[in-house]
Image (cartoon, rainbow, N blue to C red; front, side, top):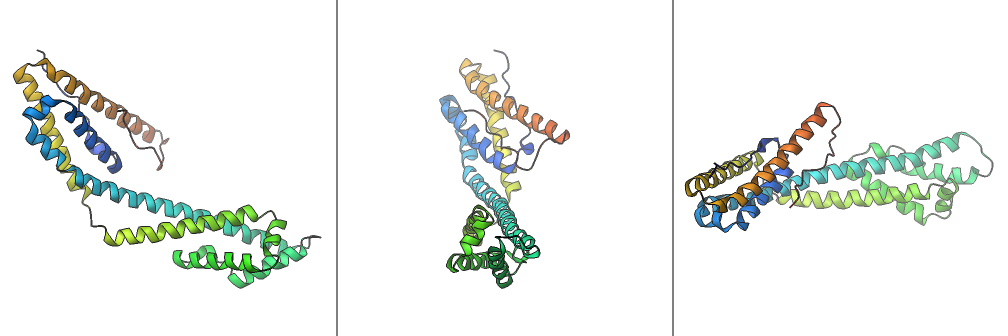
Amino acid sequence: MDTLKIERFKFDRLKNAEFTLVAPHIVSIIDKHSIAEQQLQKRADALKALLPELDKIEAQERKWHDAKQLDEYERLRDSYVNTLIRTERTYSRVAVQGYEEASAKLTALFDKHGRDIADDRNTAETQRLYNLAEDVERSAGMLDALATFALIPVYNAMKEANIHFDELWQRRNAELSTMEHVDSKAIRTACVKAINAMYDGIEYWAAESEDPAWKPLIDELSRLGAYYKQQIKARATRRKNKESGEDESLIKPQS
């Protein structure tokens, strides 16, 4: 039988979140083939033992994702409240018939709550926006004033972004306070070592036994390797051409 080799790829080119996908995928492929379990159980068990460590990396990655979400909610609520402030400033400087009363109400609102809300610290801004919203909804005619300038959608979007920011901020802080430090580099290094040992064992037994039953396992692992090699190469090309961005989708191979 011809020597069978598994097509491999450079694991270090994967993002952390991608690496947490590929290692369990390899385990699931190996588990489907009983021949690997019979002769390579020790190596398979060594790889499986590292999966809980990958879960820790995945949890850490989610925290970094939450940080990006926080930045987005921060940007949104700043944009919305600044839109309200810009509109108030514009109409406070000019007299437009029919808009005087609404303009005066908005001016009084921001004289009270300030026009530097978006420049404040995160938690302080959160509370100031809550106070602003409470004042708007309990003050007679304030919602009507916003409606006069077609600002109700902006105001509602500001409130929603602030609530999302606050909820995510509280949840993330609570989780970070209990989350242990994760050395993702060390975990990845151990996983790559275990995967390579597994692959070496599969290739060795395939060559020693000359049993064609090894070919389906090697073919499936090779398809996985070919897929990742293709995706990594495509991403490198996009990066070279300055077409890739920070929000690029993770590599998710077909099952």
